[in-house]
Image (tube, rainbow, N blue to C red; front, side, top):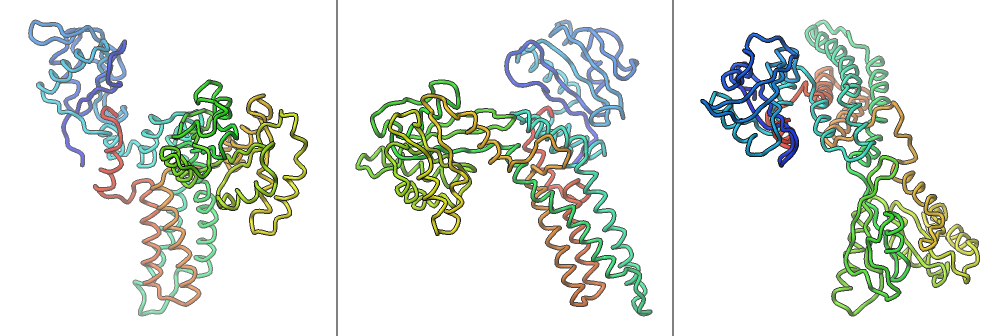
Length: 468
């Protein structure tokens, strides 16, 4: 997938800015740049130096620039790399790139600089994917997770496990070479012990994906409830702005309203929905249907009810009708600032003593607030954060898997290792053990890129921005 040519692209974002950076990589990067640069002779300058001059086309000066040189192999791609810092006019960047292409460079494809770094062994595939995650990070937690993966800790952990399997597979292969002599180089009990050890390392990684997915993609949190429960007021309080229209008239919210809030480094996408009720209004009915659809799609829900108009028995009936026991969320009693509200005991008793499976645990998710008086909102935020993060600390040094491709590869490897253990118990042949071990090695190797193909690489790097 790598051509021995020189690529060029704008490395900074499209649009007007103070500075634009144009990047070249390849064997002719310095020579091509030097052919349009008026200043020092770049071909004689050392690596990691910056030079002032002008980009010219014939007698016409296109821009005043600073040129940074990174000679192979001490660059991101391990090739000669040049970065031209020009004024941030899209026209200027376009003219410089056009001129460089005329001199022999070609336009880079999405992610091609990072692809070259991977193909030349500068980084492995999981680190390359972390580059894209770092660019796309929208919170401190997603940023920190991408930085950790870029450092290669996850890759090294998987590589160490894979190498141990490789060593054992080699013993099985050696055993097959002496099949006629009926010798056993690979002790089956030791193989089972190794598989147990590897599975004990893989399964925490697999389980960490739920948290990793939350960190990377954020948490869709739907706010549902009957009309006038205070859903829009709660959304406004959480966002600390008047985002949704608040009214005593039932059915004010007819469509979903979505806004994002950063909570302790996690992105929460709050979705305010139409009040749940039977209605003949066509538009409001569509809003209710959307609310139920968002409930099924969301990671976390907030079911809001008015403590003054809802009995404990009604609350339980609503919870069971919506099948909230099958979802992950909070049941919030609102408007406790009202003079008519007394205490939580009745609600707790009904939920706690309900005989229906799972419903009895709902009292653990019950919380009482006043959105209008901003009471217990901090407790609500803390409970939401713990729900989303599974009450785990983001500051932990444990590896967290956030990439779906990695997660699927870990799942497949774990399943195959389990099959090998069961097979050994059924006295399968060395040939089958060898075959299954190679399948497990294949899936582990997919994570770091030790095992890959052009289709997978093309799919991964096509999602990168051009210039990276």
